Image (cartoon, rainbow, N blue to C red; front, side):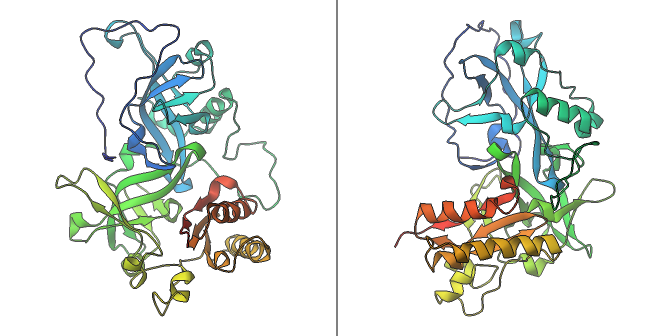
Length: 367
């Protein structure tokens, strides 16, 4: 599947067809995976469970610093040539991927969807308005994931404040520097777990300014500069070297594919990787992923590791997977023999905190 930095909406045809009460979604070439670039969803149709077409995805907004997708903005169908349509938004968690029909689904009648609050694309300040975003989330039957005044705070729970919300395409191309001002690359894509409303990774391009290739980093390691025109990563270039990378798959640099991930031999001798690589003799000196240094991150990682070691259903090999928590986001890396082993370790990690803060990157490698 080609991943394009920006997908341009097709020009409307000269004629239009009135929608029937019940329709059949048109198939397309998309093949949905759990983790996608946000650009895979631009232009996709949105249908309800009654097979009624509700609209088409116009763009997506994101709170990058909290690794969250905020709203999926949808344009509804109008009359002749689309005039008379309206723009509204849907929380990502309210949408599901219909892999068979290649559309997004929402469990809501057409009448109620049409009555949803309008989304003013020109009001950029409203993108980050907590009360407005919370009201949309609640309209679709969900609870806000960020803190609101008057909300009860659970003991030891992470308190997320809604940050600066931007359109995802506005984040593309943003320059990333480290804390010393050294150029680290620019944002080339955002990878996300759509069902959780979660940005899982930021793909960076380092070739534009003399670098070589790209890297994958956790979004919550990034912070906006005061002007909100670029990003800061608390890492050095050396620490990024050898991280999971992507390579461009065509000369126009409009699409890329995964080149190598952790635990693969091509990466193991020059980058961050699992302890399993050392145990298997792939590399003599294994360097673990960077663990968050605050108390809560260390405690969360410790609880997960202890639970994995105590689980009698997991093999000794599975217990060697790597667990790292940074800013409450836990990443699981390594490899196990069975799908059940990956699922079990993922469930253990989810029980130690918020389930949506777990990235299960464990590979299944049957003997």
